[in-house]
Length: 483
Image 1 (cartoon, helix red, strand yellow):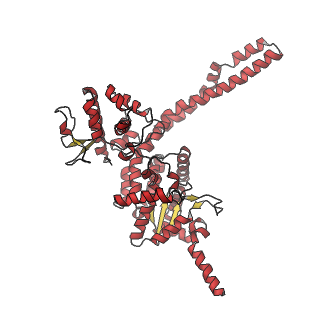
Image 2 (cartoon, one colour):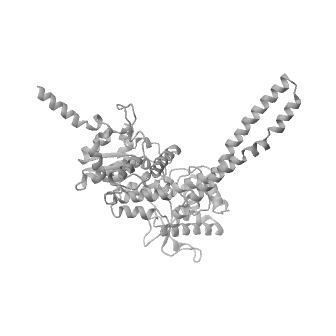
Image 3 (cartoon, one colour):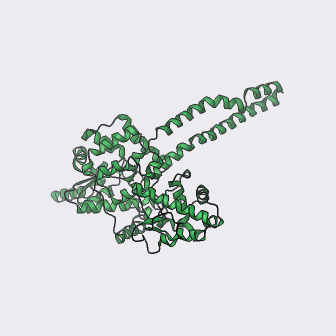
């Protein structure tokens, strides 16, 4: 009987090892083993952080990644989110720095209101209890808005100087990403070579999205259930699609005993909160168990900072304390601002998602359009695709600054090739000769053609030039994406 109980107890420990052990059951020498021989999967946020780092920190991080490059594998979902999210990262950083000085004024104005309120309070006391009109006049002469601004001016100047230095230190501009001179993308491509997951089968993709939205998310089964409120089901299922892709690859590949997944995403749909059966905050044990049962491989989930500390400790990567601190600070900054650049507006989203009320008009003005036809189109729901494209192309070509929190748009109006991208695309040759500013092998999106046909000549030419410039810029950057 004792042996039977002992055997049963051992079975329970094995079955629920991830729940019983701290830190997902990975400690000591086994942790080092992940750094020595595991397949390594970097989440999208780890790669996008390369655009957020200072040049010195970025170089050290890339050098560290080169030490494990032969074991890096890029899921298709991560690669897609990465190439689409680059411009959004730079646009957000640029926008925040450009608006930083203006944002100084509001708290300074509020400070003057507080000082003025205190001044008026003391003056009221002088009038009530002392009838001291001279004292009130002296206070007005000493404390007034002009003297207040003069007092604060050195502080404001110091703050502005720091902002200017930050702006000057940014070595990657939005035009670099849009114009084909992105300095990070080739380095990331070199890290992975051809170790990239293939595009998902459409039927399999649909099944995964439906399973995530209909079953896993309502039951709060990690990962990704916290994303259920994203604009579309496909966007909401992003983390789950990555999860399924990792499982499929690990289960089918040869000689994969360990997988190390690195992510800065520490939301509750990846990490078990402290107090939920454990005193430690750790990746959900159910993720470890599911991965092991479906792949026969062990999984270790790590935050970005911990991963690079491990690469430094076990593989002798040269990472300074300042760089490790920057890695941590970058992750915290992203979490504080609730950045989410994976919410990319594509054809699918644009067809059903209405743009923010003011953006179409901003884009209309930035494109120097003037006709009432287009002015009406940017307000009608049936022209959503055109509205989103106009919003995206004016930002992409640098014709306007990004609005705070603006979603990136991945939508083109022109395509080149022997065959149209979809049956309803119109050949460029259907336009009058001499009006179409692109090769005869160019195809035009039907929603743009509808606008063009009803627009006056000047605006029609402006729209065609915008579409041509966007296509040329994307072809140069190697990032033409339509669907």
